[in-house]
Length: 266
Length: 266
Image (cartoon, rainbow over the protein chains, first blue to last red):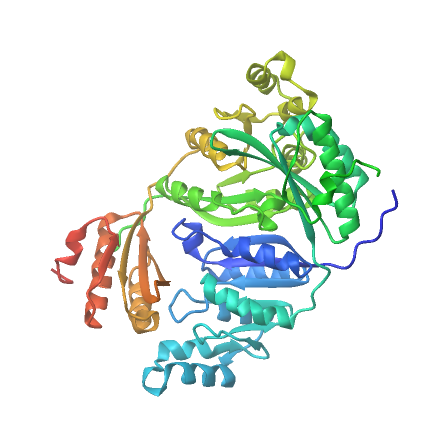
């Protein structure tokens, strides 16, 4: 078959800063949410690193990842307490001064009011020099952007609101589309066919994921790519593969259900 | 106060191998579960990296982390399909051959039976030379250990069963204990006191986590350490701090609730 060249996509890495995730106190949900959102904007999340509130770890991780991907997002550590050290660490990572940002100061003063604007809250106006603020419509204290690094809060509701601003600041790509087909076959039965299919469709990522629900084993096959025609063509072949093993596949989340009515090649 | 030296703890890193987590298809829960379990065994999870099913990424990540921590755990990518490349990558990372492991072969043959032991399933017997197998009582296919790297399945139920064996293979440390106290104060109100407290208690990790539940803001303060007396002493001071701001704290998860009845210093 003739393969078209994929439209442009970008790459991102996410750094989750926080002992609360590493100790199992808090279940991370930001990876899942951001992974989905970014794909829809044509940005592939290539790596997530969950690291503790330790200066050396933050600086090293930011500096490693910002040269490897188009966009680095960070979450966590921008509050008013002693363990909120992200802004200071990002400043050090870039060799910038951390100083009181006039705009952040005004936002915080306006949010809290003169009498409640304590020193601890004022600390949240300390932003690396040269950074652009990221709006926080939920709780006032802004995030910030420096080069390709976007610093957000860790609380999901606040992070999600900040992301709305981040997505306006970055160049986005062609949405990465997906089809998911499921069946009751063991993974190993379809493995050889999927290997061959992956070799044929180099611009489509094919993943297979076994699952157990209510004691019944099942298999989801997920296909992803930016070109809908190629994606649907590969999905049609997955349907054919499953039928060739005597099972009728189910469309879990398929862009064009006609795939199931058409035989391969027609 | 006199501080005792902490009992020994170990460090670990977790590598989660799988596009399904990065694309947001699957919500990771292994970090949360392992983070908690490891702490109880005196092993601190220092970093988690979620990486795609890409050979270079797996090899680089394994080789970076295995020199940085006592134990590296990996999850994912040990099934029978084309995207299950973990065993081959670990072999390359260590400069070892990947070959059919006799014991793994027997386990798989026994699990599937002669007639269902397909080539794809046989692939799961391919293990780096010199590795020790990790039992999989759930689905047969074993994980393996090479030096300080422990390779487990990604499906939580299977990973958890494998972890039971891993924990018998590693040297464990002094359990890391925790107390959690909550209150309705804004984080910024207690921030200066917590900063001073953290400076005083260098062997206790103090974290503060704001949360919104049902529209009401709250704050959880989590203290962790291996020495129960020091931990309770620091927690008692947190109680005193909260009371000094006119609030009555709640014990969310405290090892000794008497802390709430005793004034600081008594």
